[in-house]
Length: 146
Image (tube, helix red, strand yellow):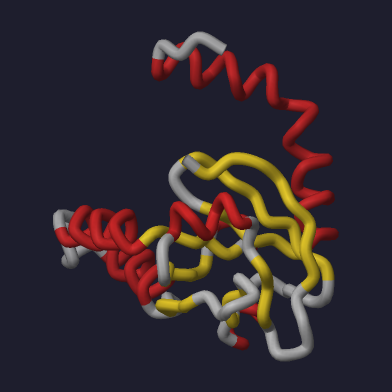
């Protein structure tokens, strides 16, 4: 399980280091793609395959399904770690997430998110005040005990 929030820098070549705990769980390589809210999502190879298999179950006759598949798979890249624990984020993904110098790397349970640091701070400032309400709605929906 991926947990925690870390701040790192992306270098001039577009490489970012991921925390050692994350690298251990990811293995030799991982998949990076566009995420929601303007971030990047990082998946283990196994989770990515499960996601791809699940997407096969959706009806390709629906425009929304085709659009989401293009969004998710069209930008996906399999990346490997170098000896320093860095991954090269393709330029198209860096542009999508507006990654410049400082990034926030978040563990979100089953995946990792990479955000531009300032964009994540702005996002968090919007949603954190509503977290009690969000937690209550999840509790009602999923019978979770926070």
